[in-house]
Length: 78
Image (cartoon, rainbow, N blue to C red; front, side, top):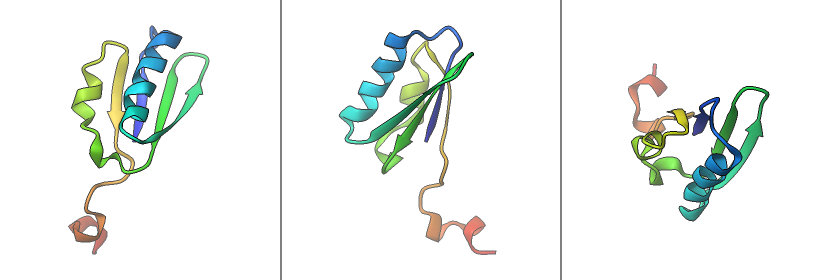
């Protein structure tokens, strides 16, 4: 899962979102760019509802990198 922060997000905003993720037992990798910060979530992201993170005012958007139930997904079996 990738969490893109808004350009107006402060260091405290990034730390707050990171703490929410680590409290769920997942690891985070924060990348601070010149314009935006991006938080990479490492682990089983099915524990997290992306909508619950997107409601934070400092979060721009949340993207899932892999789809849940990959083996049962029709897109996985051509």
